[in-house]
Length: 316
Length: 159
Image (tube, rainbow over the protein chains, first blue to last red):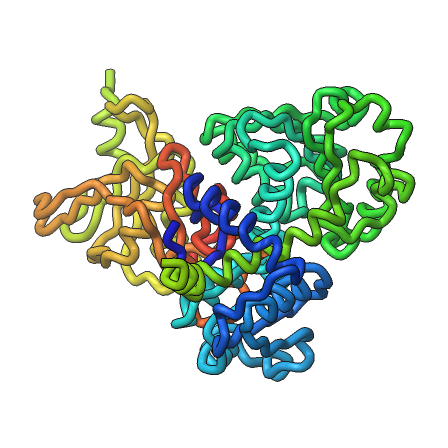
């Protein structure tokens, strides 16, 4: 795995070997992410955290990952606080921020924003979510959580449920799962099913996802139930949102049909998709999943900024 | 009895100088006309169009355009390739075919069409030309290099 000075824009930019390499390194980062051990291998580096859309987990976990490795963080949390609100292009903003830091993490409401940023930035860019596009670091932490729970990623039976149309996490995740021979089931109302171009891409990779609107029909076969929020902010028409809001709710009653070792994941925030009573069951993994954002992002920062190589030299 | 060839000759007379765009996929002639700039009313020469003309090729039918006194530049030919990937271009000089070639669609296309995704960063006033990778030639399908959206209705999104 050589990610030194590389951009992370889409999960499609990664090979299976590279993904496994990041997951292996993430595993090694866990005690450092917990604060049980300390390692300031990115001392002197500066991370530019540009979040032009609301975020809790992604922004905080990138900051946490950076601080755990000794990397400083400069950040922008609102578009209104930047010159973009004065009409500055994203390209110009990126060229300016690029001069102030060693790596840019970008969340932006428009699809393709991270690709554009990578084009204009000399330093590497990590996509932290671009509109309804992709969210590759979420995918990596999702894969890490699955592998941690199931011991392997190969051949898992994954059920994706909720907003599969606008939910960027499921687009990237489905893409990555094809590399590991996963069997994917897509559970959503017709109006929120996975876009055809993404399904076609999965089929090109040899994965033929099953589609249904009825979760009860497929939950008993799942190794992983990946639940997503139906995102009000992605709907151009609020009446369309109201038609589908609350379609799926995971509670202990529906989980009685599931395998004992089936895990429930959710990129969070949840708004009623998973009942709080599920939190105490053996199925719940979503808070562990949120924590896993830290070691996975530590692994990425370390690999991209050269910390991983410095670690190796120190060990030698 | 008239042959197809005879009919074609009557409908679209030979031109002395100009360009013949042949083997346009049936139904695409009017879109090619848009590329030529007819809708902008800036053409000073005569254009003849044959729609649903018999073809000797597998598709059996084709569209055909003859433009007098104009030779197409490469940017225009590249755009034509986007909606008529099998079209042939013949440059006519003094009634003779001076040059003939099939349009060529590169694997990578830049600055010829816009992304159909209104939320794509390339549609937001940034200083970049839309870029696409050709994922299918029959029918034409382009993948946006920025947002990954597949563009199928190319003729509606030409720049």
